[in-house]
Length: 291
Image 1 (tube, rainbow, N blue to C red):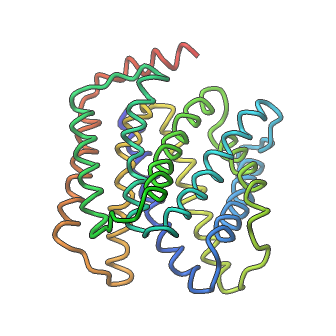
Image 2: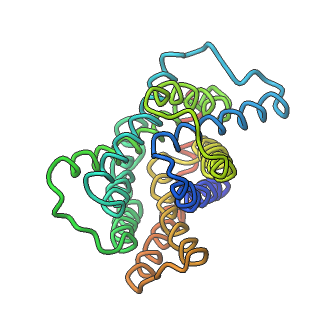
């Protein structure tokens, strides 16, 4: 059980580097869809090579293509489209804040889909991390209109669906192949909206973006979902913005305010609470054995 939570924490830490790489990439004038396209393309190359050379398997599978087609649509294309439109119509802080409504959706969906119990410590942890995210996001203008509010909340919902679909995927398939197939279809959906050339100076940062928050982040998270409830994993994964603000402070000298520090403490505290009790393990084990 503790291994699963550690994997979630490591995955979220990898995701926390996304903003750092994106900051450098944007300096080269690369638009958002093109950045995601190359991120996914390079990640596919890294992941495919890893599966073929180290796992000695074919990264592509013809099984459940309809599932992966939907997974790629939801987990890559829909998520980033909704996120970027929310940013465009509001602000990055507003978009990030609504992305992290995902744990609330995950608690509900985990209950409905997998029968995961809504325990007291889980509810307390959820409230703590949601409040923490509000504080970490800083000053956010909520006077943005209805449409960005809808797209922002939809981003959080779609983000929660990633974990639900991953949970289904890794039950009878290697997590690396599940990720490969999702990214493969995601790339197909992104291609019509992307540019196929980028400045050479941006390539090292795109490779870093592909390796750390994409390849490592999602593989670690997919493995974690074999051992951890979707709802609990989603709550622990909110340490991502904490990692992001700390890296921004260290690397770019961005201000780290008292409310942000308090928010970080609440997020970490909520993450500790949600895996403090180990009694849920038998329930998860029985769920896995049923499949």
